[in-house]
Amino acid sequence: MSGRAATPPELAGVAYERRVRQQAQRLKAELIRQTLDDITSWKRAVDDKWDNLHPDLPFNSPIPPAEVAQYREQVRTRDYEWIVPSFERFLVPDPDDLNPALDALARIEGMF
Image 1: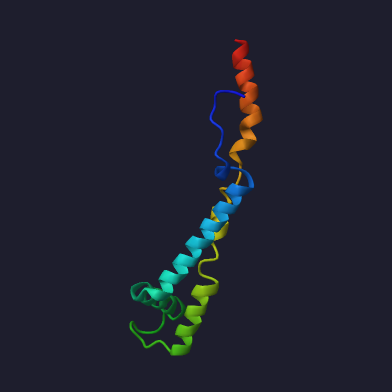
Image 2: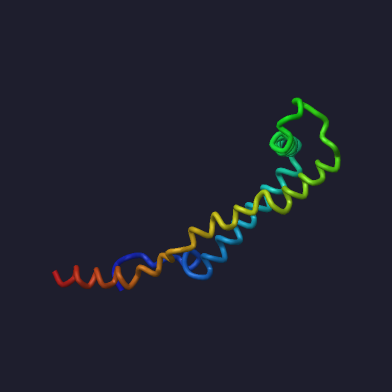
């Protein structure tokens, strides 16, 4: 083996993939929690959804409770679905996939 440092086990292979997915899930859960529990975040989310769906209504129109409930469900089930897939694009290439090429280059370097 060459003088390069080995990739820590938690940063390669299945352990790395599992860790990335777990952390992405935790981030998603925290963003959902914060949006629903933090009054400022929740108000902003409701206002944004209402304004986007009802651009024709006057500013500060009353929002029906049933629509607020729909927004809450949307935050829980749809608004943050993009998070996990956005992290999955970092799963490849596995850093250890380059080890054979690096070893071959080290052998060539050693011949010189």
